[in-house]
View 1 (cartoon, rainbow, N blue to C red):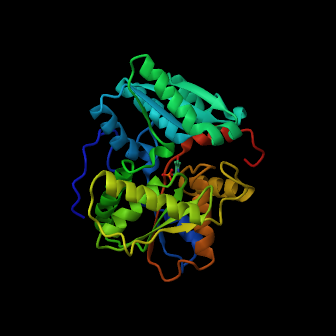
View 2: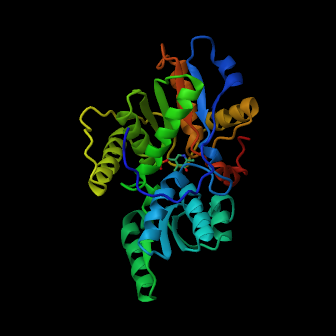
View 3: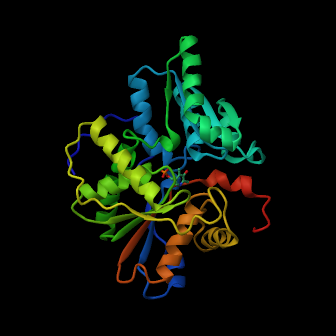
Length: 332
Ligand SMILES: *Cc1c(COP(=O)(O)O)cnc(C)c1O
């Protein structure tokens, strides 16, 4: 992979660890592939998780364009919005977050941190958010322009042609991790929500000679939606950065069977899986993304989906603060 990467702001304590899950492995039986975890929940403390990898590139672009205000959007417990609020405060940029309810999940977890970082936060009911999001974001941008500010709109999850660089970069880091561990994993698995993580990893693996397949476990929407979204981000990347790469035989693998009741709604099985990994390995998954994806991966392993594979790598994309808005639930 000989790509010329654009400049990024170094915002992460690189590289994150790749570790085997030895005690969990014993519970999976002798036929299961060896499970590894890439600890992108350790990209930092307040910026913890996958979004900062994309934002390293997004915010480098913002700086180059002379932007002084960031406008972005997401769920009330959005990890992306929290990471943007933290980075905005660290870089001296104003941050305006457009969030969607439910309001019960306010003042805790990610929402609390965003507020503490000084972000301006508007919360909209789900229906209004879904129908009017683009107009709301543009209106804020215009208002800031009238105040003489230059505002950039960052899309949901920072998933766009620029954000793709973040997990392309991570794919390179993974290659070095694999060499060090002397493994050639057949699959790299992640939770997929706005598609950018899967887009970068899929492209990175496609461009590498090693041929690991990337499988995204959807936490909302369906397989067809994510196929389209991942391809769109990659095509935007290709167009925005004039990259002449052949995408003809690139595979986008999505499993949409473990979404449960809906986005940010988990089942008792998922809570049990989170608690199980916490007790066994001292690693915390989150109920919105990683808990669902990891539960899905374990179920698929038990069903024999990965029979014959030697190594599988799960990307822990973070979300630690999301647990706190769930503390009232009876499952714990
Ligand atoms: C956003 C997020 C994801 C999904 O990543 P996308 O690039 O949006 O698909 C997964 N896990 C966590 C914890 C996240 O915050």
